Image (tube, rainbow, N blue to C red; front, side, top):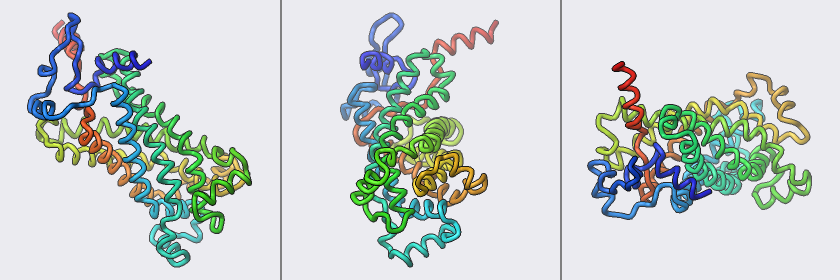
Length: 356
């Protein structure tokens, strides 16, 4: 399988400009010719991880662990108040009131409730999300060919991100369930070590996975939007906003573009996935209820409770995740492919069509 992935990677339209490519006559193009002008010093200065190698996928997973684990843990106070707004709006009237009530009742330390399942759950999710996204993106692009991978690249992003998130949520679900119970059920448990054995004793294994389907409903659209919107926004920013090509931008300038594109993607992510997020929060609080029961009880307007804090949280979160992930790639010399360019073969076909 990995041999097939490596072949697909070498001929993928998403390959890095440093990757050794295969010419039509079967000979290998030199690395020097593949290097983008202005980046030859970087290539010579450090060994770059081979694009599509096992090391590449493993380090991308490490980047995912850091980007998701750190950022989700950093916004635990906002996430806690958001969850409480979703399940008890009568008590927590708005974002600021939610913080005020929580601090008054539990002190400032109360805002950190659920940090442990958040950190471990989203670290695991990040490893699968980012690592498998790179795997599936290369695989799907290789399956449909270079020209189609360029023409239908948004569909490649959507398919790869959905596939990756499917597995990522299986890793996240048990810890997400524990987090929600700690944050939204006063007196249930104060720590992950208290919550998880109690859940197992009361409801069995299904306590950890009863929210998996609504979690898929929340996270898969969110991740599809997160990756596809980010990839397209980066492409558009370099094409229409940034005054010079990416290869002429410094690493700092490139990371600024990454952050901006990530924030834009995050706003769309929050809106698309919010109703399912509310259902997940309410479902883990209500014993014996199904996702359909919870949605019916909430009604259409009820499923938009807490949208404003979630937009703030997810926008910032997504921007920081992409910033950290891209920063890890820079630090570990992981290939960072430039925005996709139309293959020469497709250019020739289009020129031929227009001249006829």
